[in-house]
Image (spheres, rainbow, N blue to C red):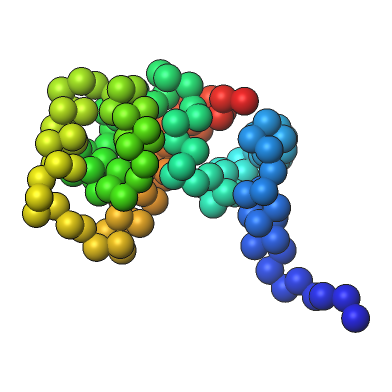
Length: 139
């Protein structure tokens, strides 16, 4: 017997998460022409924190300015050093130094819930910036 999908949105998000970035952006861009709100929501839901470094450098720099250093430190905690380095190199140097200092503190041991919330905040802000600038993920 075939499956019945009650929530098609979850299926779309699941599909978008597995798609190539180029294809995903192209599809969401087309959807935004018809339903901007839905397109934005799907972009947010299908975009992961690990993809933050895939946006253009100017957008990443602006994202760095828009997010407080304590949120950045939480979001970057428990990520690969290369990923941390990519983010810190892309943002304002003074802020990057403050974030690095927080990350290196011995008593900086945030809870997984706080890390997840910080990453969600970063992705949400990125989607907002991308929408305002009408920019997309680098292919």
